[in-house]
Image 1 (cartoon, rainbow, N blue to C red):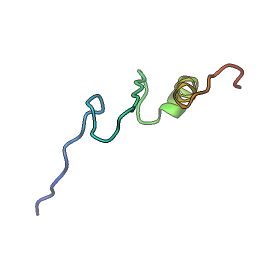
Image 2: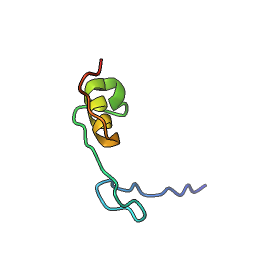
Image 3: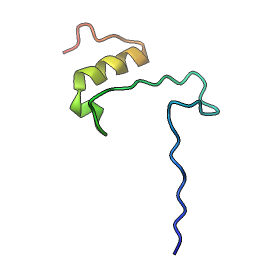
Length: 57
């Protein structure tokens, strides 16, 4: 039995049809950055959606 798999696409290379895509890299986190570094994740998320983290609790 043969299993065909698609190669992984590096996210740091342009992907057709995704113009304006912003990539945020977080260090020292794994698969769940929102759980491993909640403040860092929130800061980046707010910046990306147009808010800021000032006054957040």
